[in-house]
Amino acid sequence: MQIDSYISVTKAKTMLLDMIRMLDDKDNTVAITKNGVPKAVLMSMEQYETMLETITILGDQDMMKQIRCSQKEISKKKSLVDLEDLV
Image (tube, rainbow, N blue to C red; front, side, top):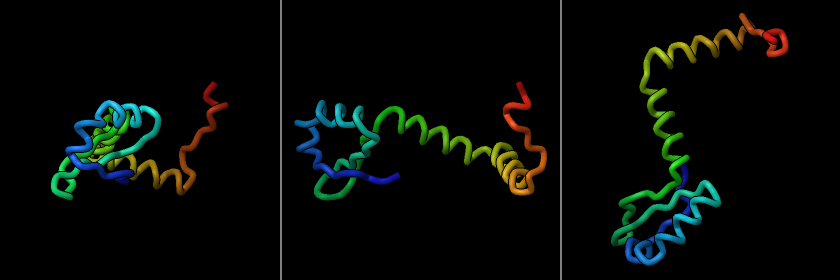
C-alpha cells in the first residue's frame, strides 16, 4: 500500500469531512502526522476490508497451500477447464 499524502493532525481535525469525501472519490491513503511523524492512516472502508481479507488469506496456511498448488497446476496447464465447457 502506498501513502498518497501526509497531513498534520491539526490540519486533519479541520479537514476531516473533506478528507473523507476525498477517499470516496479515489483509493487514496492519507497518513496523519504528529510533530512530522506518521501516527495514523486514513483509508476508505473498501481498502481496509480488502487489506484485512488479504491478511487473513496470507495467514491461512491451508489456503496458501491450495493457492500454491493451483498456481503449479496452472503453470503446467493441468486440470484447466474453459468456462464455456462448464455451461
